Image 1 (cartoon, one colour):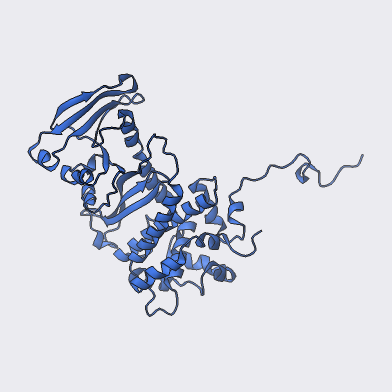
Image 2 (cartoon, rainbow, N blue to C red):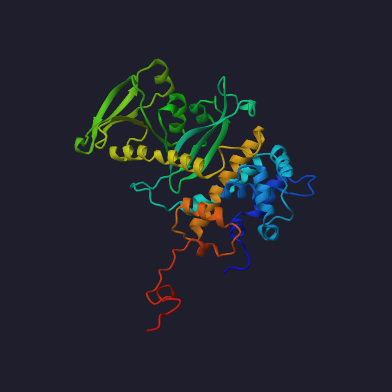
Length: 389
């Protein structure tokens, strides 16, 4: 038994609190605050994510049920729903965004050596977006359509560890392709995205910065073949070509040659056409890279099912962004603990155990250890009241 710290306190120990204090001072997050500093707000929001609290009242009641454990969890007084509501409205969401980035950077270093299943040492990112529908009456600032509001999470994940490295929160009206204007580009890395991101002027930024992209071609692409490379039809590669764009605008926006790979999926029989600016990788590797894009879809599915980002504790833009970034920070924190302690359980299992055991004082590693099988000579095999003959 770990008689000193609860599971929640052990998880919070992975937060770089010294760096977090510098972020808070830079944004004056605790300026004029006598109670409920930023550190306690993050603990409260992480508790919401770990235990799936439904509302501020739900959070207040749950913590109030364990008053003698709050101090050891990092809370110096009871958490009031009105205090947390004011903090969500007033404290700059950039505080939580920068904290999440700190944790993301730490998690990426831990997962950098993970195997992608491809003969590729370069960093591979997958880019996509997901939309969260909102009530127009409560979130008028996020106007999406005539009858509803929405926010969109434009997310790029590092496929080694499925760690989000870039997140941009916008209203639902923002087109996916516009995020390429603000996306940080890392030389030598691969960026995998779907057809919604095809804009040749924006894609040329990858070429100019020495990075590579893999995407699907749109129907009716106006291009001409320059030369063809040998293809292995037995593996599904129909053709592997170097092309140049013919369109008046597209040829101006992207004057360099592109590579077009036509692939027939042997499982579904569907033919897919991929575009990339990488001319050296095997055609099958290009196809496998695009297939890895589904990891970002799985990431969206996971966080929507297991984190608190579909219902919000506040209605302002600042409150929504604060909650999303706190959710991302919590996800990265769990990923860090999993890797540091070499826990074999899945992220889903970790979150489920935390949801029911945050107040327990078990050692974190032991909480996720496999249960030991009972011996044939254990107590369970012995009758409590032996029969006399």
